[in-house]
Length: 399
Ligand code: ADP
Ligand code: ASP
Ligand code: MG
Image (tube, rainbow, N blue to C red; front, side, top):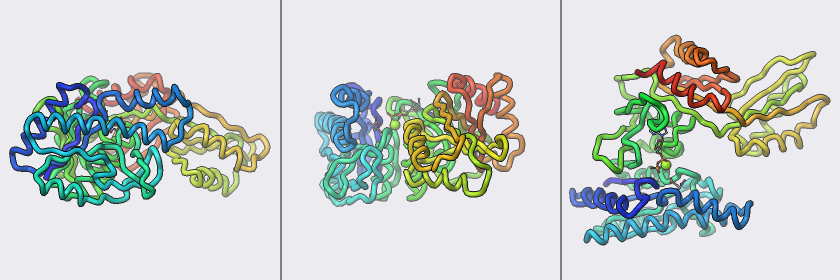
């Protein structure tokens, strides 16, 4: 059994839909059970968001989900029609019909379980099954969506639930590269990458895979391939750790949707950091890089980064709940980017950080904050430096 997922650009126009239909029917002819997950065509999701905001700048998340889910419903039907036209048995299923049950977190729902009965029945009838990506249904029968890029997660979840042999993510590049091949000169295609490395890359800004899809693939050991929907080339395999590492660094990526908040002039005594981060935690605001610095006269400054969309909310709850002490003030900056390198090999290698910082210093790029883990180093820099930084770091490690 194969699960094949086609992203928005792969089904952007009628020619591409027909091409995808060919790819699918070839696999079916080879004797595979085929379940297909499809995204909305081209920029459909963006256009639907714009259309909503013209009518209501602040729509409820529930109605947004009802609207956005129509994009995938369109493309699943068109793709099914294309397959019909080639003379193959096919059926399209919306998320709820395919048994994709999620929690109620509209616009960022998590898949709870998949009731695979319907998909199994359709495969038993020898149908090719097309499932709408990015959507599910909560326990009140309301339509939910999984967050931008979520069709990857739909595909991996179905592959896990169906115990598929392979989950193939078809997209507009022919694999996973050491950096975004559309932006970085000299980016190299990887034959393989581990789940952990890919998870870091996806979480740190490489949109080629939705990060939750990688998390799920690792958890359920789903064999995952990323490949081109346009050309027939071997793609990149995402798998458990492998022995031979060709490159120390697997990827360089940037995330421009971050903001830095500084809480300045707080008293330098135990419990302050606890207070700040528990207030944020209670509001489900994720904090990333944290930096504490010594201030003046028994005070300190605590800076941290959050997703840009959470910035205003974070400052608001801190102002409301941090029984504000004399002289405490907040600074915010969203004119920043987080640039990261990822690679499991670097934990046992000296000098990786130095080489990364050298590359930045040669470009005269100032580092505002640094964070490291076993398999990644991230730096916070000015947003306008981000493209140059990615290229310079990439040049320093991969050639
Ligand atoms: P789809 O519509 O198929 O889901 P996406 O636009 O979500 O496609 O993801 C594919 C894009 O991801 C590519 O066009 C590429 O520009 C971008 N990308 C970012 N980082 C990487 C990387 N390291 N390797 C490959 N592609 C990347
Ligand atoms: N159509 C949705 C989006 O544009 C989901 C996806 O493409 O994976 O985000
Ligand atoms: Mg995508």
